Image (tube, rainbow, N blue to C red; front, side, top):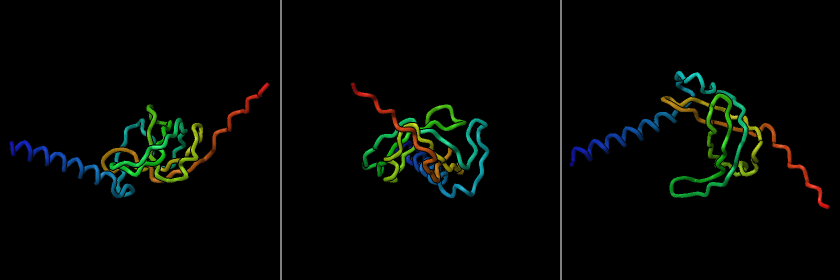
Length: 126
C-alpha cells in the first residue's frame, strides 16, 4: 500500500512539475507544432461568447471568452482577469499574441480588441 501511495505521489509531482516548466519562459523554447495549430505571434480571433466567471478557491475569476481562432477547429476558451474584458461582446475581433509552451500547448501572452461588433439595429415600435 505504501508503494502504491509513493508511485501516485511521484506521478502527481511529475505532472505538476511538467505543467510548471511548460508555462515558464515561453519565449525561450520553440517546439515543433502540429501543422493545424496557428503559428506563434499575432492571431486574429472572433469572440463567440463572454460570460463572467466568479472568483473561487481555485482561481481569481474574470471574463471567460469563447473564441474562434483560425487554424484551430474547436472553439477555444480564454479566461481574462482584466476588468476591461467585461466590455468585450460576441462578434468582437481580438488580436491575440500566442506563444508555445516549452513542452506543449499555446498560451496567450497579450490581447487587444481590434474591432467591436456592430450594435444591433433598433427595432421599430408601432
